[in-house]
Image 1 (cartoon, rainbow, N blue to C red):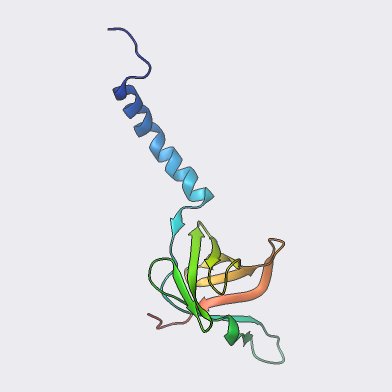
Image 2 (image 1 turned 90 degrees about the horizontal axis):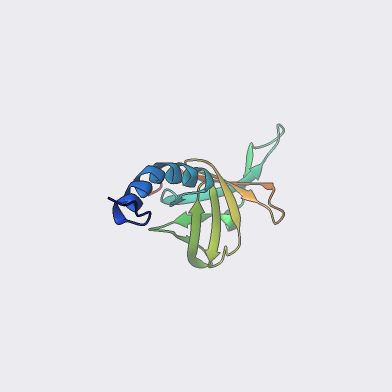
Length: 126
């Protein structure tokens, strides 16, 4: 039997061997996903002399089905890759967040640095 480097069986074996490695690398780079459904309440930190957080009602949003969201100004879509969230259409188009917990997002400013705003999924949201 002569060696044929492009036979289907060799390609299949190569794909099976490299698939787990590719999957692990993809997890680090950002696997596509969706956020938990519910209402996300946005706020900035307070201080010791007052409330711990100052809510910003104009920034609140609802994660609906699939990769869609709703605000008081309309609806749109977002993309979650790994821990990075980018709003791709609608009233929040261009806003970026970093997922810091299952239901917690931290706003990323235009320079790519974490901002002071955080949005937390309200308990009991559906």
